[in-house]
Length: 294
Length: 183
Image 1 (tube, rainbow over the protein chains, first blue to last red):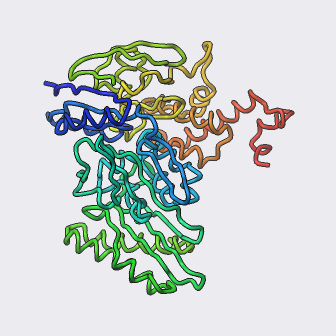
Image 2: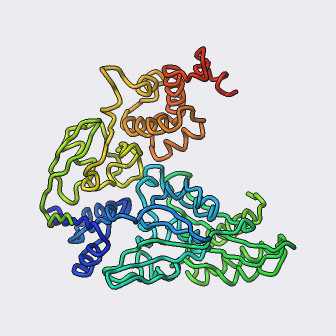
Image 3: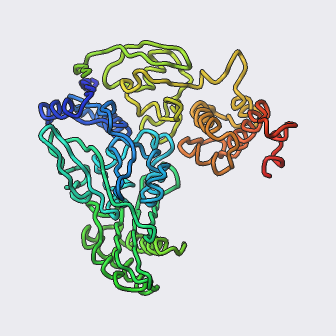
């Protein structure tokens, strides 16, 4: 027997969406580009599971898509697609590593449909954009009919595929300070093959240096290898105040790998992952420093 | 606010290959279901059903998308192009001709999706590099050809399309030869 078919609502305003989501809190699922939700519906249907009773399609709410910039702050609407972000001149200038991360998502077909809001709220531990958003200290704006609240991207996640959003809350936009031209940044991803590969591991880095070449600010976030996306502050601190040399970069990269092991525990894959995390972190740090290494 | 109750159907209208259509859909119908079953446009193939293989690629408002991942209800009022729309006036599209001549079709299952990704590329970029082509078809899997024939066919089709529509700045048909266009 095929599972019960879901209902579908297409709110035209945030208020309508929020109202409906509150009423049907336990039994509604927001759908944006559909690239995750449709796969999940299909898997659940095959497994004999129940569909959510309602799909709430937020794609027709005006004002939720697009990239804008205002006095140094870059905002990206939740419905903005990966393709739009990867191509946006504002992002390529003020957050180039996010453009790289978005360009590495899935395939052209997925990038044309998948949205930044969906990538965040699906809360996959392997989401390509999250590490990049984390090192940009991105904030996300959640709204419901009662008001809005802004939280740090890393506080969105409470577990794999679980967020801290309340029933009725809709992710409206994300925003971060544009990187200064003196900032270096990089996003490095390791997949099983180039296109369509879910990230096995990734690493995002932002580094700011003073005129003497000393690191004044470092942000390092590995992707797809922590239970919840996070920056590794202990590794960042190993770079700050130094003119980075090989020893300092190696030490910071090693620390990211050690931190992964501390957070995930030793697993069968640890012997493989530890050197891989260390290597892509080292590569990302050097690239952020303007040195292209393989 | 449009609301379709669980299990209910509704009618949507959208353009397919230039013509307006109306179809009945339910909330969990996907664009590919509407195309293949509702409209009998069976050129579009379903491979994996989860957006990994690209066999179901069609153009939605000009952009290649996996029709297995588009809820039918999101297509209301929009424009879809399928492989059936490529041939015009009984003549194959230059991409289709080139695919045949370069043996870029073997089992043929990936071909409709591959053609649509290629068509989207050539509309945006009439003179793509090999790398542009590889990127454009990176979401389309082919298990037969090894891709080289497909890339050669797309390159050749691009050449033919450019030659058929000579740019005024490139008189004398110079656009037709690869040597001339690398200047």
